[in-house]
Image 1: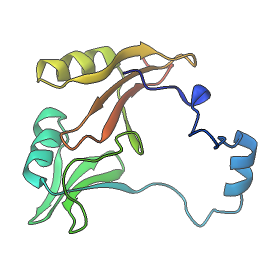
Image 2: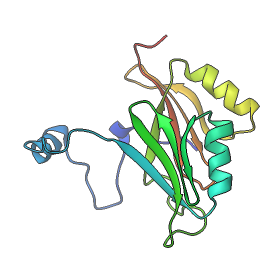
Image 3: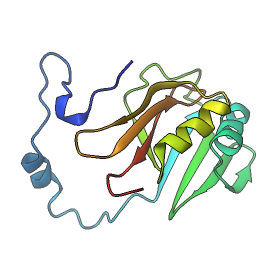
Image 4: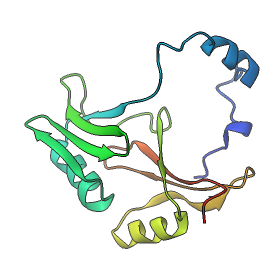
Length: 152
């Protein structure tokens, strides 16, 4: 399955994607929020998800608690935890997509394939010059390897 690029994305039959200009007008004056500091994925399979992100993806562990694992992820925290309102795999894999930066998407792709990861989209160059490959974690959350156009 090929995931659409944002330029070609249609959101349902009756929804339109707002233009960049209208989005910009929505975020003007929001300097109180100055960045993303972390991402949490809730699951009911903490052991499986922890093993995937630690062993397969190679994320270094920052801290472990009985129901929560935090990984080092640049200046941010990437965490996995159990939540009483979450059970089973996600039913909407495309709702949230986490982009994971890499300097060489082909090399990262080959490394993960060798570890048994199945991709829903192999590395492809985007119209803007960067490269993208898409996979899903054990709970079905969509992850995208992203190589910016200026990277080697």
